Length: 284
Image 1 (tube, rainbow, N blue to C red):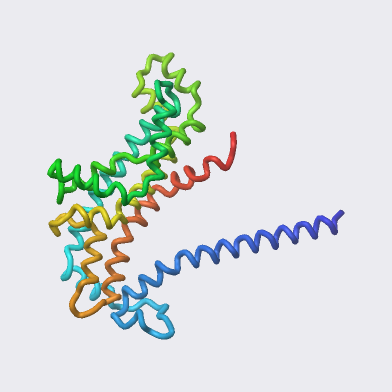
Image 2 (image 1 turned 90 degrees about the horizontal axis):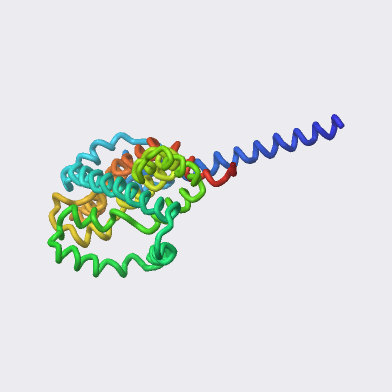
């Protein structure tokens, strides 16, 4: 028995060691592109062509970033993206959570048909909606304004579906009934009973939405004309149109700086994000 136990213990140790080795290797592979981007951002324009590839940090980051400021309104674009992404994220969380709550816990006429229609919009390619959305924005005289970026993105089908599925399993009907017995209204129940339970799902939806809006390039390119309203992705695109050729050190310094807000947002909400993704892994 002791020998068997010893063999099983050794196998368990080997399995755990192999598991952690694979995790560490996967983490290093995932982080390496970001690290190499920073390495190129700290070297001159010839660093990207260096053989063998450079793996050490240089001292040219601030020189490269100074050129970014000369060729583009980087901080203005950064502020524009922060404003648009924050407003859209908050609106998506609010409206999609309300809609998901209604679909999950309320009974009303044509509920299933409406939800089927919402899910059906997920199968429509985004490119098909560009022209009609542009026409609507033009009719409203919102072209070249932040309203054209914010209003069409204030709610989306994925957010409604995500919140509906989460609320269906995480919020028990007994909790809602208890709130009604206590005399709470619909919105009071939603705010005081439902929201505290579904915070992980809201954080997950918020991170996904912020990333998508921040990284969006096509729609701002279509509706924005004034450079003072450009988002960060459009400001980065300006760096590819310099007359003296592509300066990858400069481009990477701008890209690295534009990525930092995303990392900060993820680190701020990572605890809720992980809880939201793993909530279905353990059944109570």
